[in-house]
Image (tube, rainbow, N blue to C red; front, top):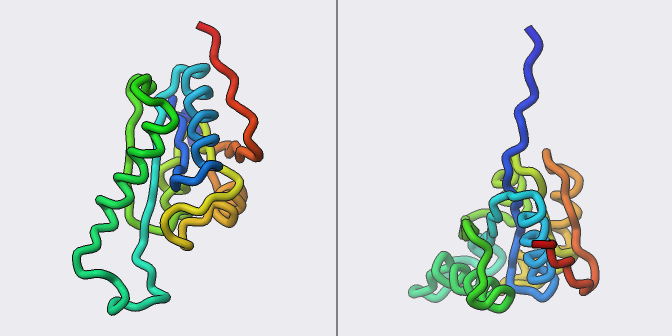
Length: 154
């Protein structure tokens, strides 16, 4: 018996780290989601900075909450009060490339900026964009420069 390929889900996944490049990626992803009638899934990831050791981490540091704030700020800066309907925000622990590859499995498309900075050096999107472009199971759109996403016709 031959396996039937799984249909792509009507979902556009975008990686955000708070950088200007990731905000451009978010705009493009929202435009694609509108054109394809897909759900927009906005993802930010975090991981403990092992290079500094546990002693360097403040005892009250809450990376989940901090990254949720970065994500919320990015979405607000991009859309204001006009958020795409059905948009989902996800804050996940793990390396950015692995998290994006896992979340985008079965998606129509993964969108990332060509380089970012985020709150931590471990969240650079330059290496992440290359990694996901090479290993993704779905199409990857890497946003370069600051060209604005087209506004979908209504």
